[in-house]
Image (cartoon, rainbow, N blue to C red; front, side, top):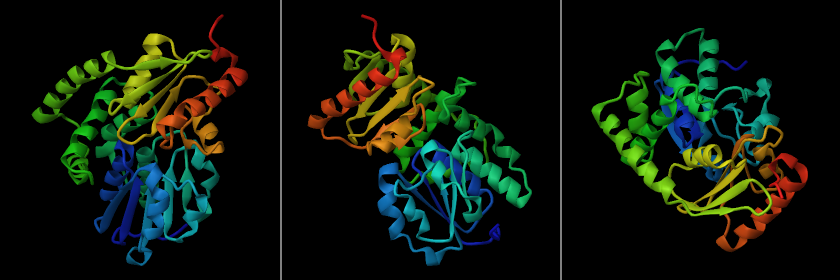
Length: 303
């Protein structure tokens, strides 16, 4: 096990979402000489080679990993803490690489530092609970879904999420008046977006493709499946061109399928496709529809 000291120079590389930034908050509670970088999954492969590893004693990579796994060999300073199924081949404790799909990235990061330093970050328990509850789509507490929207509020304030890290470094999740007002406005906004969706149903499977959306992607997919009986939903983010995939078929691993076919990656039930040119979308979706129809009878529409 590598020797890590609390006064070491730390670079935190993490996913640009609530779970990824929450993992950085955990690290910020332990290390004071720390810098933060956040990537989307589609950017980390090009970002890692640009880092100057000589400036740091350790580089924590949390809630994200390079799709080209060999990039993890760029430096022996990496400490990987991830939870995506498609990252499992990277799991190697001897190299300080830990992948655990049973918990979100922030929860895994908290467990790691608590065990390593024989300390308790109990003041972060409620904060991490809601991050984990939402990120794994457990929804044991309805507040978790609302709490995730707060991340979006702070991302609008500054893209590098420094204000979000500062806000939740103590683990205090009691809403400020501004946050409460924001959540009230979100409820109204969400209803308008949901009611105005442009949906295309698949011909042969219980699924649909949402032609365009720019926000609420997880929530829209979840509610479309619950309210309309779809077993799988594809939704295109018109800002990025990426397509989010959500489903509820226990025997289908979306992240594994997309990775195998060089279409993207992610979790079993929640994954994402790389940006696709609009003209190529019908062909890609038809290929996926055929695969699902042949291999998963439960998704077939009744004749």
